[in-house]
Image (tube, rainbow, N blue to C red):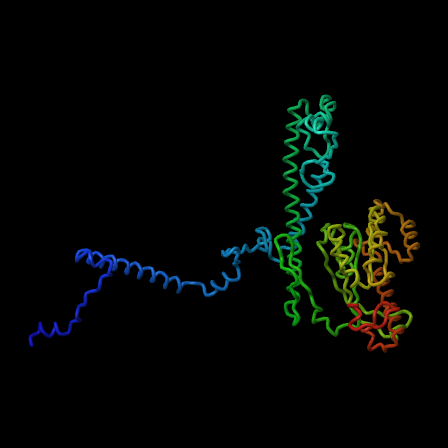
Length: 470
């Protein structure tokens, strides 16, 4: 057999691909064209499959799971969920705990500037150039149709949107406005005021954002302290761009078994009376003159040894861990602070001797205590703070003592700046609370070794758990 025959014997037998029934009638030429179309289609499919294989290799393994978590089905169609970022750009830039003091200083400066601008713009009720609204009653539709606000308010149309200092036409004709001599001057003055209002609005928004930054950095600082503990803080609410996350902090492992009693005190009073400075002076013996409003609530701790002057607790000194809770005095945080009233065992009611309104609000704070505290007659002391500012005093010592005597409460004049009577006031409150605990122990008949389960209310039966949490 020749070489040609051997080569032919090894070849595959060519079998013509059958043409579909519908196209058999077109003949051989159309059959060749069909072959070409099929080949091109096959090559296109191969290229597409190659691309798909490559994308499958490069795909993120968590992509499918992420899509399932971050998508939702609505009316039979899939939509991607919009995930809100917890931090704004400014909050990301100031995310280091080392920036905390810088942010506090920036917030203090911003608030001072806002206060100055408010006084310059005669801003009375709201922080912003919002339009004034008036409700005017008319008899019929005809009067409504003929009503002219410019004539009714007797002013220029450029001043209708003002909330304050809307001058009448008589004053405008007398040229008594910001040095303006013409109506055009009035309009220019109004435009200048609008620019200042816009700047004020921006500064207020920045101050609010800095408050959120301070709250988030304080939270980060506290979380870092709890990092090595076995019991970790539990997140209650996720943080947002306008507020920090909320965590539930367990008792620190370092404190467990390191004390006989855990006592919680709550400092109350109007904003700016010096509650934060008072607690910093007592726990850290430090003072700063800068005013930074407390956002929400914060606390400080201090360990002390209490020994009763009346020989209580078997004459033995008791190791006490004091938790002093600092509350925000602003009205917008009132619902948050009242939630902590029931857990506190003693209350430090602070007013500013240079601010008479803070003194007059003492009774309001006491009425809230009666509603929210653990009993109707909790242990309270009253402190007239900023005693070092004698030249600016508005509340006399005799007047404050008279109120304290009427209420049957101890009164101290304190100064966080000079440390006057700060420790003495807290020690007095601690003595009152420890006396109540001693009475509860004697009433229950439990030995001292088991006194941790005793309620603070002497008339109530013993309760389970630590007295700090009752």
